[in-house]
Length: 326
Ligand code: PMV
Image (cartoon, rainbow, N blue to C red; front, side, top):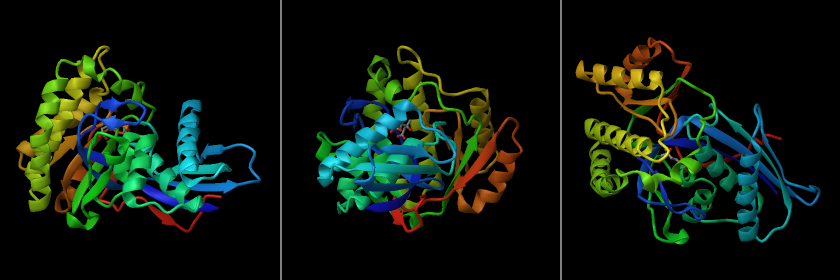
């Protein structure tokens, strides 16, 4: 009763910020993302009658008590569905800094869901797996299907799920993740979203999203990079304006974030097709097409104040592998 899975983080072009149901993690709006090849989590889960308690560990790091409890809750959901009562050993390894807006919770809960159901001997459809991953962390549902993924908000737990719009092989684009601060963010997305309705800009955001979603879907189908980039950037800025006008205001950017966003705009004015998006953190995802990778990397690496750079291509969704972590 042991299995290992790898799951990618994902970057949303149309972002999820705010829920209609806290417990079930039902989102206020549909969202759309791309899986990231260079930012992933590997998780091994084993259930055994020999274990007297759950043992959850982050290899090369440490989970907080809150994170261990969240994994415990997810394990309880999975055990209930699989009809088992055994304790679990869960080892997890990230390829990138945890908690810095690089979506470790998305890849983490996607890998946990796929590994734990496999270890429990329970075969679920991909749709069901996305629903269980969502209960752990909303955006985790988007890390299960292949490539470019849509999460339909739904109205109940059973119809809030994610599916692939295009496989990762569809379009050779890049997400160059520029890390400017690898520490844990101060306000988690779970806490930050709780006060979203205090923003006077939320209603306008929710109204604007369906047209953006149509635009991104068309851009994907036609491989229209400028359209995709423009909409992704607009939606990112819109989400951050909502965050910044919540009570209390949430400010995830720092000076380096703003400097990189300005640099991207300057490069674009000079003719380079490059765009940015930022999640709930200070790190910047710089988007470009594969043919411009070398040029953009060179410019990004020359910027002052950056800690590291992670190069991502579109990636497959969560899947099992044979090499266990223990
Ligand atoms: O699912 P969570 O709690 O990791 O929230 C993700 C929220 C954003 O990253 C800010 C946006 C998104 O859609 O990924």
